[in-house]
Amino acid sequence: MLKKRWLEGKRALIVGAGSGIGRAVLDAFLAEGAQVAALERDTSKVALLKDQLPDIPVILGDASTRESNQKAVDATLKAFGGLDTLVNCVGIFDFYQGIGELNPDQIDSSFNEIYSVNVKSHIHSVKAALPALRMSGGSVILTESTSAYYA
Image 1 (cartoon, rainbow, N blue to C red):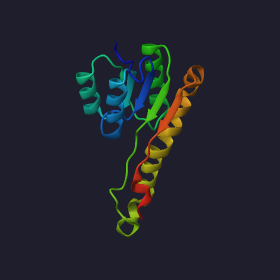
Image 2: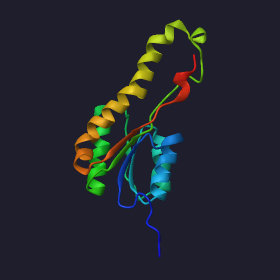
Image 3: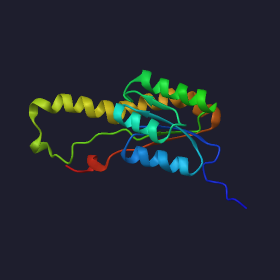
């Protein structure tokens, strides 16, 4: 008797699926039987995903924008008829650079970039996915970097 895989029949959207934790999550969900769609902003990573996984929807877009997240949710709904899990794995960090090493002329732009990617992307992805997740009784998984814990 074949054992049913843990996520068999589930439909997921992985935001930031092109590398790192996002790619690992995508691969794990596929291995467990989920139908998976991906949102990625790096064109070379999008091309690689499409080449390696031609049967999954891969959307090119910036997760820190409403438009890209809505486009990814819409593509997921079109492909699978619903959404059960949203996983946002988007994030950037400072490579453990302390405040003493920061260039004062770059603080404002760096803050805006980090906030946009690490916070706003989560808000936009959840907002776009929420109606579909409410219909399915689905779940949201948001990841973060541990670099925030180092001064």
